[in-house]
Length: 123
Ligand code: AMP
Ligand code: ZN
Image 1 (cartoon, helix red, strand yellow):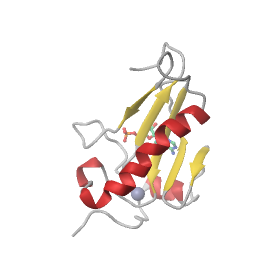
Image 2: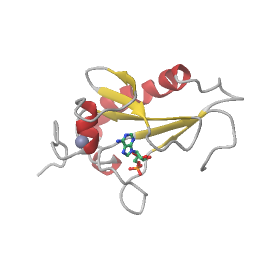
Image 3: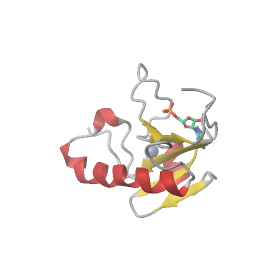
Image 4: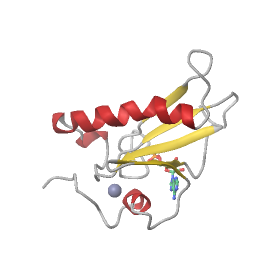
């Protein structure tokens, strides 16, 4: 059985993407949802998720290549919109924790995008 679902009704991030749990929205389109992390590590810290319930990077296959490419392309666009300073003096960090040993707590694929002036709380 595939772990990739259109939607998992028990998943926190599926509920956030559906507007069932409130969030500070950064961006939304038909395929993606982006919102501020509730415990930011950096002056800018938001998450980008696919609306498709992919549990983690471990389930990403060639079938998802185009979707992942579009998700990647959102990163610089939304980082600039949220106030990350321009590259190279500014920039941002892109992180995807995967699995327990990778430090993943929420089992719905997400990109952390962090930026803004140092020092940061972590990292
Ligand atoms: P990870 O450890 O990579 O799975 O990251 C999960 C992230 O989700 C953490 O940075 C949490 O602070 C964040 N988070 C958890 N619940 C919420 C929520 N309701 N709204 C926004 N961010 C959340
Ligand atoms: Zn989900």
